[in-house]
Image 1: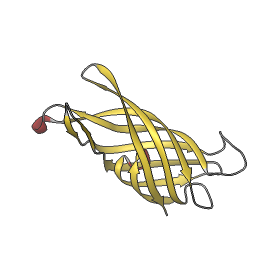
Image 2: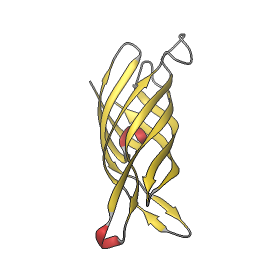
Image 3: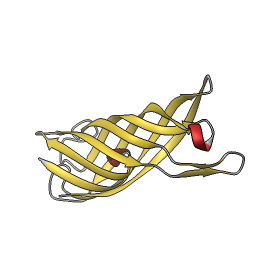
Length: 133
């Protein structure tokens, strides 16, 4: 069992996660709020729960530091401030674990995301920086 705090897909934005480590895998449930800004749309703060699965033996078998995985969770919002709805989407995660095992210690990575907003698919990214206990 693992608990973590940070930002990015592993934490559904800025948030926390609870996960389970396997031999070369890490599955997690997360809750948090993302923060984004664009000059034409202003602030975007999607909040909610997400989930993901990371495998550490796809890129290299020598250690469990490089992880590739999937994420499903909030990626954006739509609607006005009073009638805001979260946009759920998916992403592909790359994460590097600095600790001595899978999902232990500090991690850093990126998750390109996509979600359907106003009838069109919109791309984004989540920067992963966190700590797994």
